[in-house]
Length: 383
Figure 1 (cartoon, helix red, strand yellow):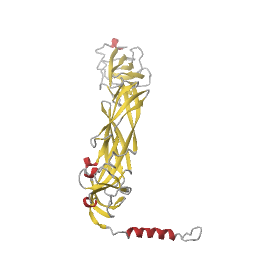
Figure 2 (figure 1 turned 180 degrees about the vertical axis):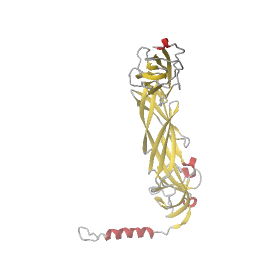
Figure 3 (figure 1 turned 90 degrees about the vertical axis):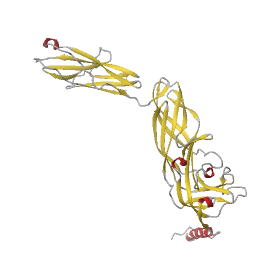
Figure 4 (figure 1 turned 180 degrees about the horizontal axis):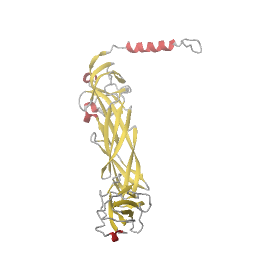
């Protein structure tokens, strides 16, 4: 046992603590266990246990849905923690039961069962301007399927949509309440809402990452079973205070002053045939067949073109063996003048861009009759 500086044993501190606990338990005897719908309605006064803390948000996912709108989902966890006891005679003038200045009384310390646990998450219902590159845009938040408008805010998540969690037992010792059972502790709730971008001004075409800060608040409440009892989601008769904020990174792409799908996608045909037709041996050398590859993109992009064949050692072309003593040199060009096996910094427009491609035959030795066949691969990369 450790002594303090004056030699008094530390057990005195422990004795005082135990004495205080004994006084707490030797107050008026605890009332018998009762259901919440009796213990939370006493003498015309309504009660509930509410917490505005212990909320955490994670796993934020942002998905483009079209029309400048992004769908945002996340997980919300509410730690059970310690709740405060609120009271009201009108179900709207909610006040902390421990700090009320009127004559309203609080029930005796009691254990209650058959309670419900509810969570509401609200966000600021405002339209704000955000910087996007060298310009600005407007972002407006839209409540998801789990919520709706509520005063100056809107609800992102309302437990009534999922179904309340039943609490087996809670202990109420006004002005506080604690959970004896832990059915609602650390339960993951899924919430979702939309962010709509519009009125882009001075935003050059391109891709941007925009950080949208959303002021949010949440309340968890224990209340008697029954949908909508007590306006259980409100505190002191007003909207949930927005004590938190989340920052959502949104990938936005501007095209022609409008927010468009941030994911650039391009496509091209599966195959292009370079047909030289029927040739005599004397016509094979330098016979040329040309075509184009149509690359269709949903946005302007920059790409590279690479041709690969049987032999890729030359910079200007890929060599393909066609058999019968004949080879083809395959290359690509942006302008039909400069040909290469590799094209870099190829501008791809929103719509269709055509890349020129050609095959030039050569016969370094003896040529025999027969069908000439071979293949090369065109690889187009874009960003």
